[in-house]
Length: 628
Image (cartoon, rainbow, N blue to C red; front, side, top):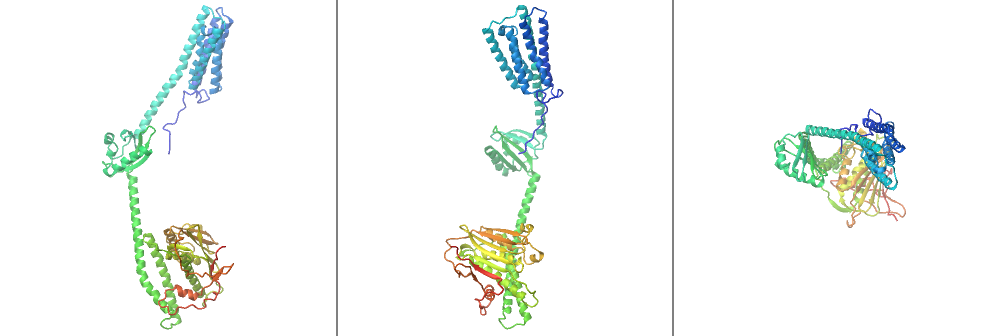
C-alpha cells in the first residue's frame, strides 16, 4: 500500500538539536544567553555583597552560583543531549554547594535548589525537565540532611535579606525566561497544527474523489471531496449509502459494507439511482476505531471499457465456437466423398478388376496416397474442432496399452518403407537411406483404461512428426514405461534437426509449426496441438525437450494405469523373448501394408516371407524382457 506524507516536516525552532550553526538554532542561542544572564546576575550580587561585611562562605556560595551559567557557553561548540545532561549535574552540584554554605534549607539561598529545574525548563526537552526535577529534589534532600546533621552558619540579617532577595529574583526571572521559549514553541506548534489542519481540509475538499466515514452500522458520518455525478449526498447522509444505489445493486452494496465490517476491507461497484448511465466504485477499509473509511470515485469510463471487453470476449468465443462447429460439419461432409475416392483408387491400385498400364497404376497410387493424406488432415481438423467446441467425447475401455502403440508403429513403419521403395525407383538418388524406427515396449501387458483411438492418435502424430523432421540415416525411438502407480509414459526421441527455442514456445498451439518452410509444407500444425489436447482430456500432460541440431524428445504422461482392467488380448506385439537378450521381431512390409490399409476386398491380402528380416534394417521392434 502506497503511503505518503501530507506535509514535509519543517526544521523545528523548538528543538535544540536540529542544527549546529547559530543561525539555524535560535533556541540554543537563547539557552546560552539564559545561562549568561544567570551568571551575570549572580556576579552582580557578588559585587554588591563585597560592599558589605561578607564572609568567605557567602563569597564562595555566590561564585558557585555563577559557575553553571558560565559553563553554558560550551553549548555553542557542541550542543548535544549528553552535554546538556552534564550541565544539569553541574547545576545541581553548584546549587547544593551554594545552599550548603549559606545555611541549607533554612538559609537565604535555599531557593537555588530549584536552579537545576529552571535550567532544564530552559532546555525545553521533556527528558531534561524530568532529570532537572529529579536533581532539584535530590538537592533538597541533601540540603535538609546537612541542615539537620551539621551546625551550618547562617548569614546575619543584613546578608540574609540581600541573599534572599537575590535568590528569589534569580529563580523567578530565570523560570520566567525559561518558560518563554517553551510557551513560544507551544504557540508555534498550535499554529502549525491549525495550518496543517486547514491544508488537510483543503486537500480533502478539493481532491476529485469522495472520502467517506461510516459508523459501525453503516451510517455516513462525514464526506469530503467531490461527489461523483448522480450521487445524492443528502439522501446518503439521511438514509445511508444503500439508498443511493440503483435497486438491483443495493444488495451488493449492503453486503460490501458487512464484509468490510467483518473482514476489514471490501470493494464494490454500483449504479447510482439518480444517474443510471454512471457507474461508481467504492473501496472500504475498517479503521482501528471500528469505523469504516471509504473512497468513492466515478468509474463510468473504466466500467464501460470492461463491459466492452467482456462483450468482445463473448463475441470472439462465439465466433470461435461457430468456426469450430463449421469445421466439424465441413469435415464430415468432405470425408464422405473422399472415402469413395480412396476406395476406388485402392481397387485400381491393386488391379482387382484387371491389369492397368504402368502410367495408370502410378496415377492410381498417387490418387490413393493423396487421398489418404487429405483424409488425415481432415481427421485432425475434425478432432481439433471437436475439442475446441467441447464436443469431443472419450470412449473409455480397458485394453493393453502396447496394442495401439504397436499399431501406430506399424503405420509409420509402412510409410517409411514406402519412402524407401520410392527412393529405390529409377531416378532416385543413390546412397539415400531411410529413418530407423525402434521401439522399446515392456514384456508384460500394460492394463489401462483410456480411449484406444486417442492413444493411437497420440503415438501416430508424434511418430509422424519425428520421422518428418529426422533426416535420412537418423533414428526415432519410442519407449513405453509405467511411472509410479498409475501413470503411463510415452517417450519418443529422434535424432532430427531439433527445435529452436523460439519455435519451442509456440508449439502445442493449433496451426503453429516449427522448422523450415519445406518441413512446414508437410503438415498443418495440428499434430502436437491434438496430442496436447488428448493428453489433457485424459488428465495428463505433454512436455517437449529439444536441442537445435541434435534432436527432440517428447514425453506424454497419462494417469490411465488400471489394475482392474481385467485380461487383455495381445495382438499387437510378439511376446517371444530369449533368455538374457532382447528379442527382435521383424514384420514384412507387404504384410504390414495389407493390415493397415482399409481394403474393399480381402481376397488378395496375404503375408509373404514374414520370417525374413527386413532388408536395410531401417525398422526394428524391440521387446524388452522383464527385469529380474
